[in-house]
Image 1 (cartoon, rainbow over the protein chains, first blue to last red):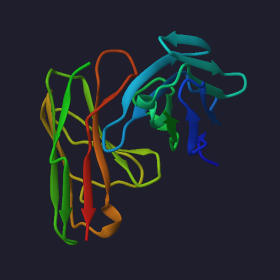
Image 2 (image 1 turned 90 degrees about the vertical axis):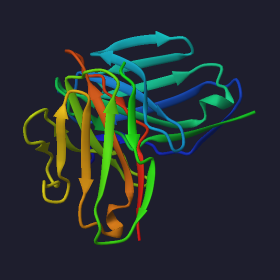
Image 3 (image 1 turned 135 degrees about the vertical axis):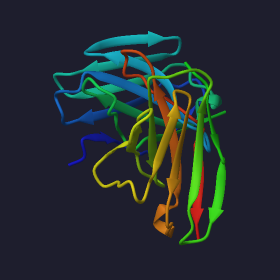
Length: 110
Length: 114
């Protein structure tokens, strides 16, 4: 079993729709949770960073962490074609070692 | 966050040769890391580049295959030695500063080994 599971998709939605992404994990010691966005042929870009459980909102993006279920989510409201990318979840215990999901490829159709 | 650049952005190499990838950060950072991203797979940490000392390698990665240097707080190199087609991948460096666990990534080096 992988430490972090993420559905690779692909996920295709019409412009303006809500994009819902999620990851599950097995290690209950994870405390720090991140979402990265990676455009084709670019490096990952940090989108959201959350400590422990709860919600965090930044513009059109909302990150949720449910530690009791070992489940994290990223929601993108009012999706735009420019949101088309691969989204990677990542998490760590309390140090530099990040465990990544495989990434979900999202296409937002104009 | 610091701006990270990598050279080369891509390369095509023959098997048995070596390639050195450079990572430059525009400000001093505490920690620098090297990752591999194979097609369709998640990022895998190769090693932590320690300033002034030997790198710390993760399980499955060895210094003879991936020698790393970090001569100062803004620069690091990763060499992929004696390459085979299985080394075809994207190689990324990242940095982390301060007491947080956020890491910021460079644009990556896309390596193809023939």
